[in-house]
Length: 352
Image (cartoon, rainbow, N blue to C red; front, side, top):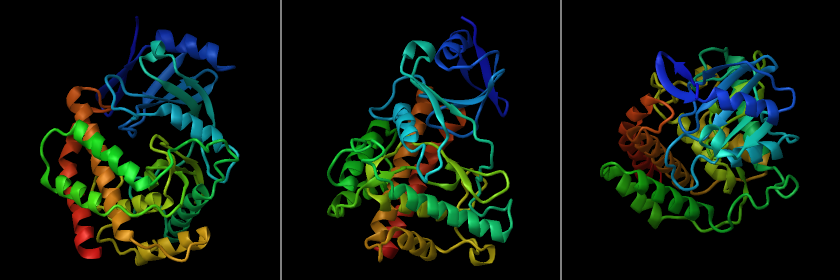
């Protein structure tokens, strides 16, 4: 068997069996023709994602990571299903082309979708653009989120896409369990946060929507020149759930420190001078678009978002230790669990 070694930033990250992949795709995708030039996207710690340049065009391949996986994690088949269902909606998604459920091809599930040429912004302060476009990009994110939560799931065939019952209770059980399954050492702030959340789960208010699960700036592709979203990516965590979870998760990301890492937040940034809406203004726009008067219990939703992010980070760190992470740099993520949990505890202390 021959393989091509994929490199990103000078680091060997993964191998793909091209001798199996190319013939398979030529049979599975009409018009697909090799040879194949492959490069790996630097994002996508959870599910490795590759750019495929071929004689017939450019495609994107997204696969589950190799090795033993946590239950219900890395659900690329769910990603494929939800993007296909949203193809004709107001939510911009890439066109999906093929889902492979035969693990003999790559060793795990994968799918192929269209490549969307555009801009991805990693810094929430958007230094690449001016104030007018910066304001428009944030308003576009707000519009897309409200549009997502307004989707008629029955009409697009996703009425069975999530389980019934209290969303936050189900999510609490899921991520507490996954955190414990990937726990490498005792992290006291995380234990304290898990206990507090378990004691303050809100009653089910009946709100149900299609939720993205990881709604943030760097999971969106914008038009090369216009402040218009052309693709919302990374649907692995999508389900039927509570819409405020998505809204709080995005606002939580914007509260993160403005560091040199990808997805730098807006902590300490003068938003007004940059024409970036305040959290209060952003929430008000979302409520107006969604026909909601106000959002109560906001501190819980924020704290819960920090908790879930910490649990996700811990899972990536565990896979890195086991040698199954998408990138070796993922091993460094484990050190972030403690500070992320502390952010949540700070929100609880000051705002609950």
